[in-house]
Amino acid sequence: MTTTLSQSGIPPRAAGRPRRQRIASSRNHGGWVEMAPGVWYLTIGFVNAYAVGDPAGRWVLVDTGLPGTHGFTRAALARRWGADARPSAIVLTHGHFDHAGSARALAEAWDVPVYAGPLELPYLTGRSDYPPRDPSMGGAIAQMSRLFPTSGIDLRGRVHALPDDGTVPEMQGWRWLHTPGHTSGHVSLFRAADGVLIAGDALATLDMDAWASHVTEHRELDRPAAPFTTDWQAARRSVGRLADLAPSVIGAGHGIPLAGAGLARDLRLLAATLPVPAHGRYVARPARADESGVVWVPPPVPDPLLPRLAVAGAAAAAVLLLARAARRR
Image (cartoon, rainbow, N blue to C red):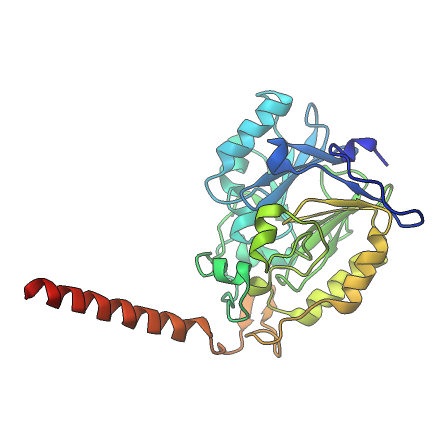
């Protein structure tokens, strides 16, 4: 394992306890950080993109970040590897706006193909939107999700299905795995030679439900973003499939990548105990999708925040009316 993972020392742990290697925060580092040999990550807002290969030569960009951030990504590449740094392909773990939002802009600027899981193509070719978000379970990411889109995007002419044999174009030694749950066509990428896993949103490496975690970037294995996960049983099975790989390094869509002793054990524990929300639209019944996109979603569930917003709105209106009446006296 490369020693470039740890840039900031931590106090020694007690004898006999496994020591987790610490990968530097891209946000604090100000650019691309190497998480494993030939694998770098960049935090774009609150989501990660990955460069795999040799950015001074041939490499692949995995996920592209939020809409409108293509300039940030290209500038970060230029600072690290020069103005001519460009990938040979883009691979998407899935098509949610935070992972594929800049895919078209970057693919057209570089004139490169985009690859995604076969069952993700309906959402990347304008044929289907994603199931509606479900913020009813509460928590930080659920509340933020009220402002996030669930529409698909149109990458026709650029996007292609990943090969059926599990290989990944332009990523020698890597294979893709279908890891549904967060989306029906979600994929994760694995390099068996040294156990490096790019998990996308099959899981997270921070608690996305805690407001503080989004600021402190506290590192922990946790469930995927709850308001956009539309099949919780599939999500649990997918984490179990990743745990069977016993990875030594995990980079997810959200949070600082994790590495070192105890990681495989912790992932097995997450697979066994994946915390499903206590309530929510997709908890009892998942959305259903096929190769054409979404075919059915369960009905909405009561959102506890809406009555509070109604009360707050009524109170604000009353205050405005009283103030207006007072000015007329």
